[in-house]
Amino acid sequence: MPGRTRVCGVNKVNNDIELSIVCPFYNEQDNVAEFFKRLFPVLESLSCTYEIVCIDDGSTDETLKSLLEVKQTEPVLKIISLSRNFGKESALSAGLDFSVGNRIIPIDADLQDPPEVIPELVEEANKGFDVVLAKRIDRDSDTVSKRFSAGLFYKFHNMISRTKLPENCGDFRLINRSVANAIASLPENQRFMKGVFTWVGFKVSSIDYTREKRSGGVGKFGAWKLWNLALDGITSFSTAPLRVWSYIGLLIAGLTFTYGSIILIKTLIYGVDVPGYASLLLSILFLGGIQLISIGILGEYIGRVYLEVKSRPKYIVASEN
Ligand code: UDP
Ligand code: MG
Image (tube, rainbow, N blue to C red; front, top):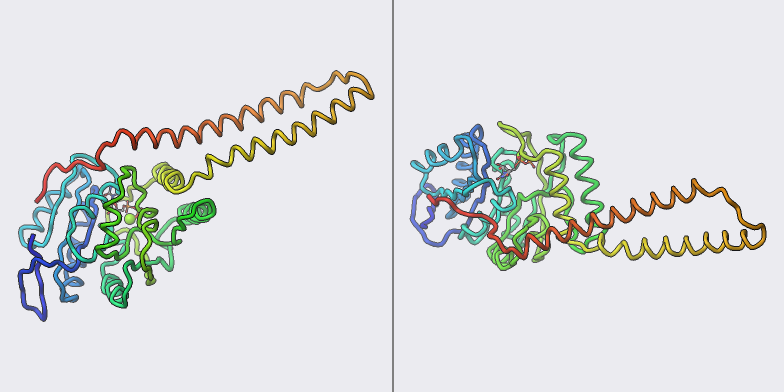
């Protein structure tokens, strides 16, 4: 699809698109107009060819209709409509697959990632970086509990995984074509994009920005969804939760041996000591709990292996406009 160049206000049609903006939309009807009102002036100021890839992630409101209306006057829009709600990670994958620009910037539709930061990302990339992260310098727009749980997640994830996620960075960043191609070549279907972006490597820099409040509508990530996203992240990039059970088992076996030896010696010296109900019950319950946790963690990984081997596509496209 041809891109549009505006150099010093002159429109040109060019097949070589320099910048792709990738934006997932899920029930964002309240934000569509405002989003483009702020995005277009920024892109125009960049004097480069660009396209805007909008992924309608199975919205049930008027999001798709609003996007199609914008496209009538702005042909640079590519609207990919998914057959149902596949989740932000899949919507982003679709956006990367359909974008053709030399540089790609995923951005949220709710204006929490201010479009005005885009020129700074481009400027930093011009210094020779393949990836430029947009780092949130303050998360005042997030609730205290979200900030706390996010902090905890990053600390825990980075402690047990070799893929170190940059703290306070979302999906808002600039990546160049080599990075996007590397991501596209990964065969996995269950993608935790923040991890995947980091895992592929390349030359990374970052700039700071202030995360704004949601412009309209409601956030789609409640506590349960965030918890599951955190589990996806941890199980996608670390096998430490699987391996830790061997060590816990060894430790418990060691303690049991020591305690058993003490009881044996005491029995040999002092004879049979009948009371022991409490310690017996406690050790059975404790070990039962430990075993259930370890089986649950095994289950988490097996569930993900199961989803991967089914090799279902990451998303299904219902229509392209
Ligand atoms: N989103 C999506 N599919 C979903 C949930 C969210 O495409 O299932 C989009 C949403 O429309 C928005 C972006 O992902 O553009 C971020 O969502 P949200 O603002 O709810 O997340 P938060 O800012 O709370 O992390
Ligand atoms: Mg948001």
